[in-house]
Structure formats: structure tokens, C-alpha cells
Image (cartoon, rainbow, N blue to C red):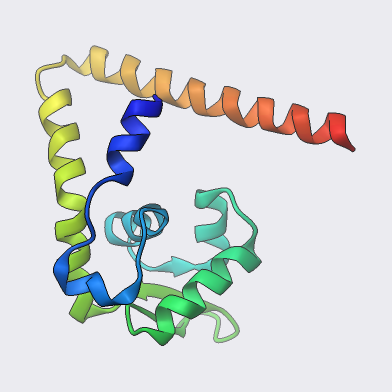
Length: 141
């Protein structure tokens, strides 16, 4: 798992985004917005498993740079929806493409059942990491 994560962090930032001081930590945020579409700060925070204030600061910085756009939610004008700016979507998509292509190549030869087992295993791992993190947090309190 550390090798897997280390490899993902070494994916270079595309030249078109080079002047924005982006880092691998932005990949997850961009992946959610690119693959799942625009969402609120709270939705992003829940998916990234960080505090909404952390995501809000990150979004504010990326919005000032013009990489992300914030707009009013049509259904509830008090809420803000965050999206990747149209001008930067191709470069961000290209940045994420090698990882997506690698997953596709790795998973394609598997049967549906094998893919389900793989995904279930990753989800179980994620749940165990979260439980360990919570256990440590509670024991420190």
C-alpha cells in the first residue's frame, strides 16, 4: 500500500497547471469533482475525511487561482457549489488519466466477482484504518 500511494504522489503536475503550486494532495479533491461532478464544501469534506474548514481554505485558494469555481446552489441560495473551472478541466483530467487508465487495465482481466472482492477488500481496509484512527483519537482524549 505505501508503494501504491507513493507512486500516485509522484504523478507530475501537468505543464498547463505548473504555475499554480499544486501538489498530489489536490488529486483527491480534483478526482471527486471531475468524476462525481460539482458538490458542496461539506460533501467534499465528508468524502476527503477532513474538516469543512480545511476544504473551505483549500477551495478558497484554488478559486482565487481560477482553478475552481464557486457558485450559488440553484435549489438553496445559501449553499455554494464547487466545480472545476472549465478552462482547467482538460489539464486536470489529463493529470488524473494515467491513474484511471492503470486501474482500468488492472481490473479489466478480472471477473465481476473478482472486481467486487477487490473493491470490498479496499473498503474493508479503509474502514479498519478509520477505526484505528478513531481508537487512537479516543484513547488520547
